[in-house]
Length: 173
Length: 208
Image (cartoon, rainbow over the protein chains, first blue to last red):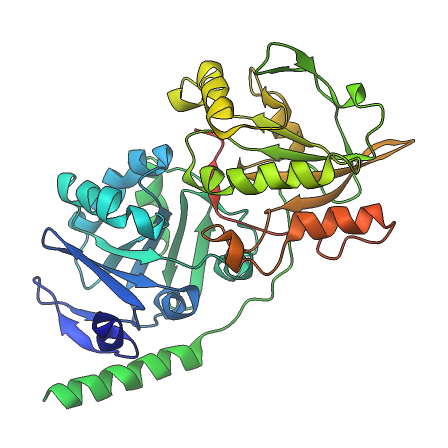
């Protein structure tokens, strides 16, 4: 509970290991295990992440460990994250794993796959209310991806190959 | 210094939210059925080995067709609620017909044999059909599991009256305060218009 209070309502800039500035949102909770921290958001607290206007291009991927096509394309997002400079592109992996699976499935997966991109958990069961806010056309199946920069945004309810993903990203740089 | 950082952070968040533009939402489904369409019948293999069609249900007033499967945590989270729907509405003329649309080559958990095992474990009270060759789900336009279609039987065929989620809380049945499917079927039984006709939900993608 104290953890919850500590993070709730706290919005700070903090510096990560690469020295880049990141915006932290009002997480409702944080899972910590094995040296990995995953903040948890409801949609309202996550939404600002989809609308940052700082000149950087963001690639937001909705996924889950149980989603096979999501896991299959994850290395491409990781590759984008490592190949493009942090001040130009940020990859954010929004996990839709159930909260009860975070410590048993998500964190072990992140550790095993050595995932470097930023990972957050979206825990908001009233999905009918927030799916259309991500994109009107989204049926709710994953993988789904948003690539955006400032007010220009494109939504994809599909799986990517690396080339397709990079091609779409380049249109938005 | 820390206070300053917090203040700058808060100011930035406020600035960002101020620029946020909310999109106007209007439900749209690409391909597949929309409300008012006539749903196709099928002849699919049930876990007991029989072949099941909607036309077999002479007494039914309609159907709760649910595309669901074994491997998906969202489907699993709804299993008890699917059983409850069947128990509540089968006797009133709206049986649940569950269809597994997945290709077992992509998801071995969703093989026909594993469907039998899961149905037995959970005590499914409804047919659990296998969309062999994945021919039926694309006609309905199901994109994920679970994905519900409530059909009303009329002289012109089975008409789609509701498409979407079972309720508005996949995590906790007790916390769901919008029971979309229940409300839809109850309205149809009373001869009323379905209050919410299309909803969206996170689910496991059918196309693997």
